Image (cartoon, rainbow, N blue to C red; front, side, top):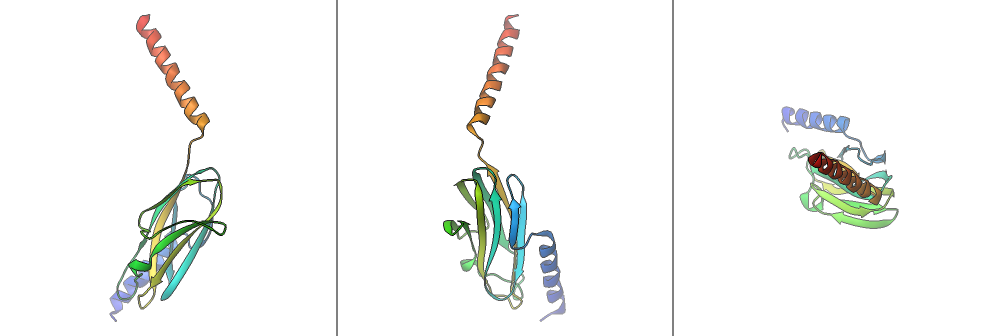
Length: 160
């Protein structure tokens, strides 16, 4: 094993962990981009990130393996994300690099990143989440009312 490769792998692992939030509670994440990530030991892992949606909406994001073979690597076939509300599975996405879950109601959820780290030192992943609330019907009504007022004013100015 080359000394430079091991140093590079440790540097990447330390940097990724310092910038990202590890498994655990993320709090309320409405409209707040959240960076997640972790370095894991060799073998299977299931990292759980719990969070709250204050408003109904959708959750989108991506999680990617940061691979430095043979030291750090996660098997692509086992890498996935699962979304749960309590013990109820909402959905699984086997392509964690780009996932989206829609029609979510307000409440507590957990996102689990699962995989199998096959590197000699384990694996490393990083990614991000964004929860976007669905606009309420009142928001659409207000937007339409504003457009009507602008149209009315424009029409009066043309006549006068």
